[in-house]
Image (cartoon, rainbow, N blue to C red; front, side, top):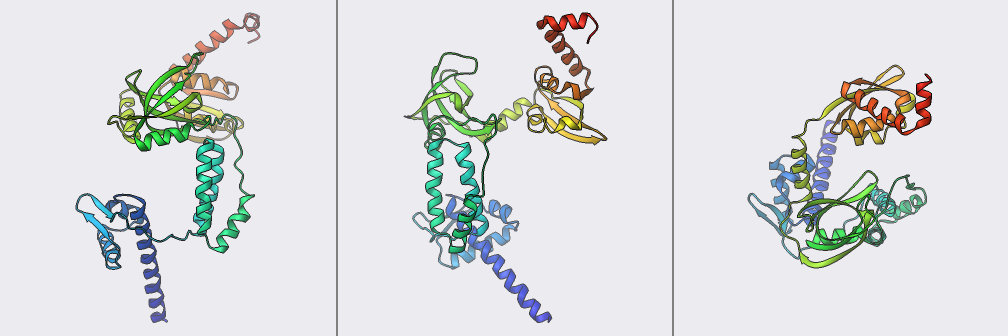
Length: 341
């Protein structure tokens, strides 16, 4: 019995290594250069195991080029045959297709749909049947507040980022009734607060600026090459370091559990850190950069179900806002003077 279990263990170990080596091959083909440490981190193995797997790939006749301190790459022109997708990967692609249709512009949706036909073409029969079965059973509902970029805006931005080209942008800033023309160099895009944004070097302002995609009237790719700019990842790292110079203020509020369900999505916009259930109440902790304008105004939406635990500055900011509200509404003023509030 022990001998049988030993052979089973050897077989499983062999299959695990075979699957890992296949995955390493796929990763080598997906990037120009892959670092050994990246492979070790992804598969949870040691660098020694990575080196052994790479030797096995080379012994199998795959032309792998390695350079110390740089990484591994496949010799230019070498291509692996099409790889079969697993059942789980096919489901992930199908789900992504549904999301793309709801959260990107028309051009990107069409490109992804075209890619999906190629994915479906290499699926096994059982996976194809599974995808067809799930097709009508995955629906991404539109949420209130979601805004899609007009036309092919995202497509143009991505091409500009990939080809390192500038774009001519016609933009209407928030609160501005007139359009402005800009020459900008996009370094990346991101989705936040139900909108798509790009960070770009603006030639007009001579600095990095954030542009919201749905406020772009038009975006035209130019032949003008971008200057050497930072990456989006590095930009956010620098931005985070700059923000660190401004101290965050801690705030704690107690919210009746009836109101918490209406606060779940927006609380993260105001520096939400943690929460603790205390009977019929939930105690929420925030670290905020805009205590008076941001957190205080948001608090007023649920003020009848909440109370401020700390700090006093937040209580004062809310009181000042309430005074302004009373001053702007004469009827409320009369009620207040008669003792109704």
